[in-house]
Image 1 (tube, helix red, strand yellow):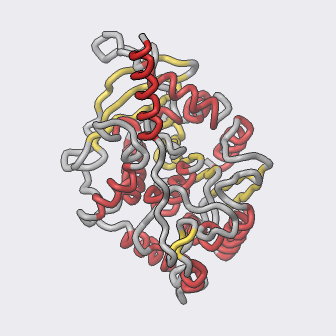
Image 2 (image 1 turned 30 degrees about the vertical axis):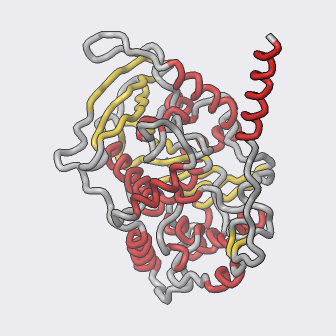
Length: 397
């Protein structure tokens, strides 16, 4: 017995030693500090944004917007090819909810891949206004579309067979809704109020993830590998959002003249990118993602860009900053909400971005179409914010 206890104790010691982290190797000289180059301030000084409204020399607003769009698409690199044989939408399963139907569908977003999506259609006669509901990042890749629309739990297939419930996905989605959305799914909330709602996984999220399983650290590695093919993973997310909106516009139940988009966090980034680049989108609402690069990309505010390649388009910052790109959505109605307690986006950068956008909407003759609001809240999208988004859609769509 004594020998056994000695062996157990030895095993514990060996395990502890093995798990102990090796000391960080440091050189006396270095070029990077807090994940930034030491010359970060010089780099920021060099960002003059020559394609921004007022900087480009183009005085006609429509001509400027087209030129700015062309520059963004150039930096997005090669798009995925459109589906050669169309969307080929397939109804996989459906269930009835309170005032609307919830469907799992499959469709071709490009000629490279076929994706799963969640679709909500209100009861009654259409066509209805529609919303592309864009999910967040959250460093949580196990679910994507299920962050916006609750997964099916009582569904049947088109031939009447019960649809198997993925209890792990449902439980994870419910937890996520509780944490970020105050227990309310944005998509379901909108559907109960008369909107067709579509949500798809962004590349690397949900059913578009890794066969080996979720590993956040692999995202940037895979994005780098994609660049070796001359394409950009973040751009594919935006290209897919544009394609999904086109698909939404083709549905018989949708009024194609009344399509909006909304999202929180990375979903907000996706919302204003989509609004800027797609004429299909008539109204956009973005919650908790707006800032200027000079505030974001410095250690002075104790934060840094954590999205990594999820919102990185090669070389684009040499031409346009975030609010400049979002301003390409003018003069359409847009709602931007940020939180004063949001530790990801310092208030000085948010206010500076809001000011830049207000200037552009003013020059476009659409001052009242832009709403920029700072709420006393952290990085989140509670029910009160969702209600504000709904009212904004109702007023403008």
